[in-house]
Image (cartoon, rainbow, N blue to C red; front, side, top):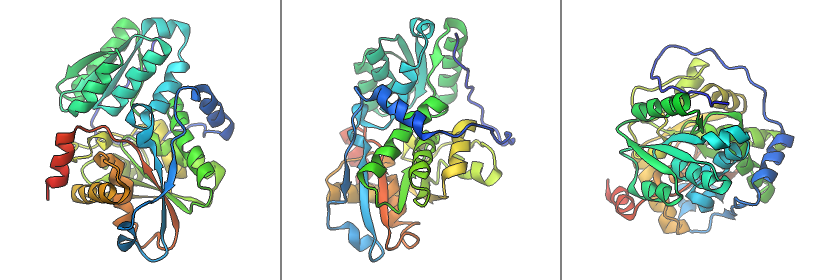
Amino acid sequence: MKGAVYSFVVTDKPVPAPEFDPLTLAEIRDAQVLIADYVLVTPSVTWPGTELPQFLAAGTRVSAKLELLQRTGSFKARGALVNMMRLTDDQKVRGITAVSAGNHAIATAWAAQIVGVPAKIMMINTANPRRIELANSFGAEIVMAGSAKEAFAAADALVVNEGRTLVHPFEGRLTSLGTAAVGCEFLEQVPSLDAVIVPIGGGGLIAGISAAVKLINPDCLVFGVEPHGADSMHRSFAAGSPRSIEKVATIADSLGAPYAMPFTFGLAKANVDDLVLVSDEQLREAMRLTFLDAKLAVEPAGAAALAALVGPLRDRLAGMHVGLIVCGSNIDTDTYHRYLSEQ
């Protein structure tokens, strides 16, 4: 059985709104059990520092889900492993491929090693050096491409010519079942949450988390946050169907998906209460605050939820108990220092 081909197409033409079966709590729990021996139940903590309250409206409380402590350094390990463990025997023999600027490549290489599946992963030349190093460390064949478009074209060719299965970086039911576990864990650990803020790249994380949150506590608000330079989900919500952007322009490269896709868009549209945008400077300030106050060194994507809370959502969430998804942190020290030094 060959995997699906997901071509990289940048277009402003409308895509029909997707029809899909919503996730169920039972299948989310089944996915949790499937990968339980390999992934971590990451901690959720009350925000530990003393600096943050001065940036918040009075009475706002903050808890953080530390998914940066997950295997491979990001939430991506969950969805990648669910996909890998649901491969047929024939698919395992033929192997898999993936496209990524970093975190998905690392997670897919790790998951392929766990299951014993040959992996040929396309990474983009602009990927952070630390992410390339980590992806290589798990034994996958890493092939560098000049652009995302070239990487997807090469992966599509592997699907057609070698029969490999493409493990998409964010689209699909299996991926969403993996990320839904983050939402389940968070509400089990902190059942008093009034709202959850989730970073958005392609939408795989918020698709799963929002579905789980609304199944467990429909009254808990779910907000998505995107960088101004990578707002494909904003455009998709406005249009009512998945849309693309012309280019990605943000320091949060792991949130830099150039398009939305039907299944993840459908889940997000059904379960997310609202979306907000943050600037690169807001991301840098949130990185600084996370380091100084919580003693965590995060990549820009890992600070996006905090940037939204102290920025566009500050007054809207006044007095609430807010949950932040700290989605990951795979960044080299030179780049981290440069981002924090820039004004």
